[in-house]
Amino acid sequence: MFDALRARLYRLGFNLFPAYRGTGGRVTYVAPDWQEVHIKLPLSWRTRNYVGTIFGGSIYAAVDPFYMMMLLKTLGDEYVVWDKEAEVRFKKPGRETLYANFRLSDAELEAIQAELETEGTESIDRHYTVDLVDSDGTVHATVRKTVYIANGRDE
Picture 1 (cartoon, helix red, strand yellow):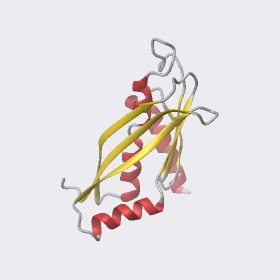
Picture 2 (tube, rainbow, N blue to C red):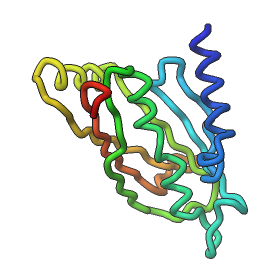
Picture 3 (cartoon, rainbow, N blue to C red):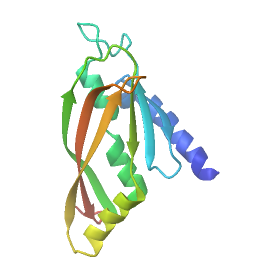
Picture 4 (tube, one colour):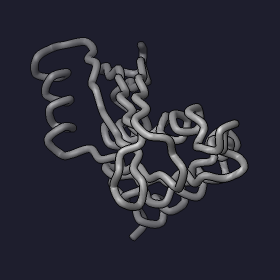
């Protein structure tokens, strides 16, 4: 119960935080365990570019923080997590609200911990991909994020 309330407060916090609010994106769901986040990015006066479609900067900015935040919340304070690299592939102009769903599986989290703890690796890079889709499921953009993860807080 408390985790569900905390997740709703994080959702509200993201939507009120000026840096995220400026993207035009809105967080619509945060799972209590932080393994799933949903966002929407409407076409509006704030996100519309010169030719009437969603601005590419809004597309990227709306999805930017989530894999890093999800990993920070799910792995805990004993890990350092940083965004390292990003790539956006634009496939179709966004002429309506776009949606993105971020997911981290238990298997992915276990693989990260195993690689860092049992194999003695100091740090790793993980790659995550998220599609921005319209209400019909048509992909308009694909964002690939590289996230740096290391043991400890001293890095």
